[in-house]
Length: 114
Length: 111
Image (cartoon, rainbow over all chains, first blue to last red; front, side, top):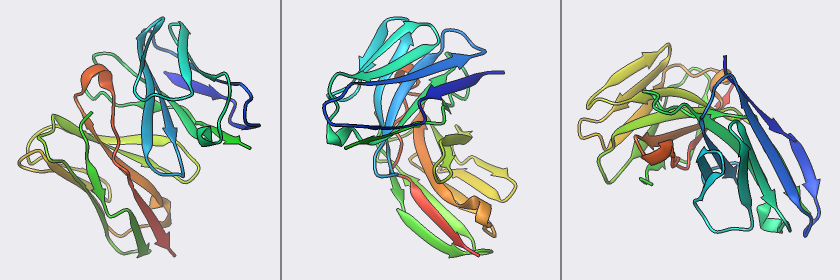
């Protein structure tokens, strides 16, 4: 069965520090991968998606970047965090060509920037 | 992506009361997905509706897709404390499987 791992679960970082959140998927290959952010416990904003290794598309301009160095690995990064980067970051994957097209989410990384 | 509006934003009910959340679009949707997010947790897929006028049931949950495929609803009969959370709808059938979620309805159930 497929699983998705996301870490770290929680982190507190000072403004101006770098960020690296990692997500890996097991039990499938060549998935579509997504990074979402949820601010203030409400809506989910799509930040990046990837359809293959090295292929990253950004949905909104921001202080963050994403990379996909391996098929089932998705990384969210920042060189210098801003206060506004605080939030709940969720990685998700989807099976290409699946009839339902549902997204499977990781357990999330809660980031607080002070 | 396609935008949807969810109403209400918040709903407080007494345990045993019914609950309904609505998802509305100004454009025709290919399909609609529903997710539930428990407090502090991650969204979990509930169901996908594809056909015009489709109705699907999962125990106490009833999902409907409008005849014009522009709106959808989730109805919970006799809520329980385990129903607490945020319910999101998201239009599916988009390029690369990207989902744009509605703002969600936060359900609180008072015992």
